[in-house]
Image (cartoon, rainbow, N blue to C red; front, side, top):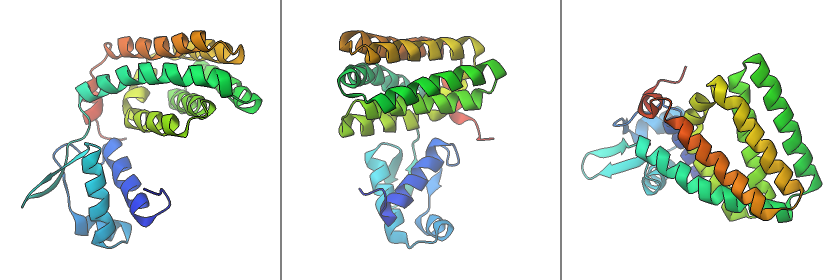
Length: 221
């Protein structure tokens, strides 16, 4: 689905609203209401809802309507476990394909992340974390892998923010980013793969420090 199409824009907006908590688990998605809010007809809304059903974020119940299923704590853990494997592959590929410009930007992101961690600006730390991973995905040179990992990263946005707010995790996480970068810069694919996989595995361990289900249910501030 083209991101620039009307259906694509409607799909992205509804998905964003689900992932950010505007629509909660069990909420009904009413086509005409959403259409009015977005200034579109019911057709692109209906098509977007069907796409969201394929992604597992919405359930269509015959003669009743479309209801948000959202993301469960089990989904979160599954996505992190999958990411541990895929990001390892991504880093290994980045060791072969990363450009000088991408490496320089990753270095800048690490510097900014440390700066904001020192200031206690954890929203900025989270943004820089997201930027580092996006650069890593792009550096792999694989459009398909980058797209897959970007979707996972977006799904986990709220959980990542909560995780990085723990002072004891923000600094180590950024240090792990630097290890990944150094391996990529040295063109050591094996070391890059191991470092990236370990980074996500450490994140999984950190998830045990807080209530994932509570985070998923929280209202966006």
